[in-house]
Every structure is written in C-alpha cells, then in structure tokens.
Length: 47
Image (cartoon, rainbow, N blue to C red; front, side, top):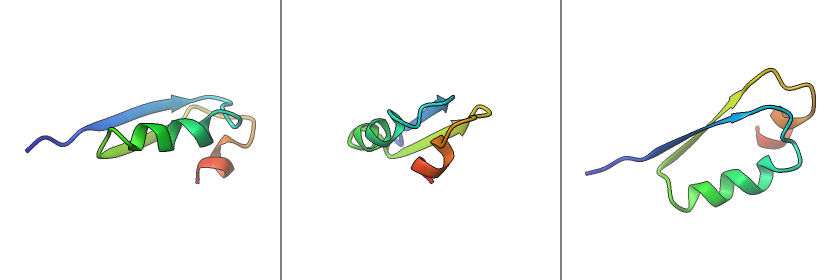
C-alpha cells in the first residue's frame, strides 16, 4: 500500500493557501503545511 504526503512550505500565502490545501488533498493522503515565519494571516486561514 502506498501512502502519499505533500509537504508545502507557506510564506505569506493567506490568499492562496485556502484553495491549495483542499486541491492537494484530492490527490494526497496527507498534506502538511510548514509555517515559514509568516507575517500575514496564513496560520489563521489554514489552522
């Protein structure tokens, strides 16, 4: 059995992350978003 994980670095992507993660989840078993020190609301949008 194959288990596929996408790891996405996210730096100030509050406007795009809400669309990107659900799109990736269609094809991946798990999606991990790495907070690269955001200064915007990326963390709040994705969390």
